[in-house]
Amino acid sequence: MSDCVFCRIVGKQIPATVVQEDADTLAFMDIGQVNPGHVLVALKSHADNLFGLQDAQAAAVFRTVARVARAIRDAFAPQGLSVYQANGKAAGQTVFHFHVHLIPRHENDGMNLTWPVKNPAREKLEEYAAKIRQKLR
Ligand code: AMP
Ligand code: ZN
Image 1 (tube, rainbow, N blue to C red):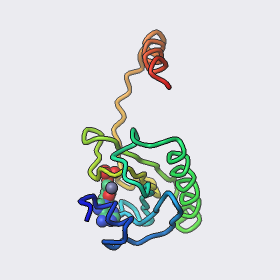
Image 2 (image 1 turned 90 degrees about the horizontal axis):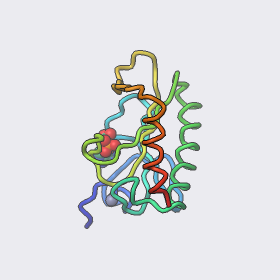
Image 3 (image 1 turned 90 degrees about the vertical axis):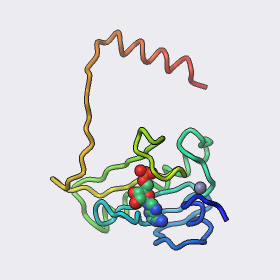
């Protein structure tokens, strides 16, 4: 048996409350429920994080994300919805099987992400962008 909790969920070896399933993705209720209607969309095949996704898998995940987001909107009528996805411990990832959070949001719901902007000069933006462009393939 896999020691990955989401592989076990995908393999139906441990229970989950599923909302949507297709060939590549499984959407199920996050056990923690930051707000009611909090859903996780996981890739069925194991990838530790975003860096392990093939293009077709990334497309499949985001198709499910958009589809389930609309259903959450219609079911819970939240004031907003956050899409959250963590890669690596430093980013807050705790389950190392790729997944995306869909979190219905309300004013003052207590979910806070600190966003320490640096507002660098345009030259810095150009420098950062050039570094990334060099690595695109
Ligand atoms: P993170 O890796 O930080 O994106 O968060 C992992 C999420 O998985 C947390 O929000 C947990 O509540 C959720 N989680 C962990 N185990 C289970 C499980 N067995 N069923 C549903 N959700 C889970
Ligand atoms: Zn896994």
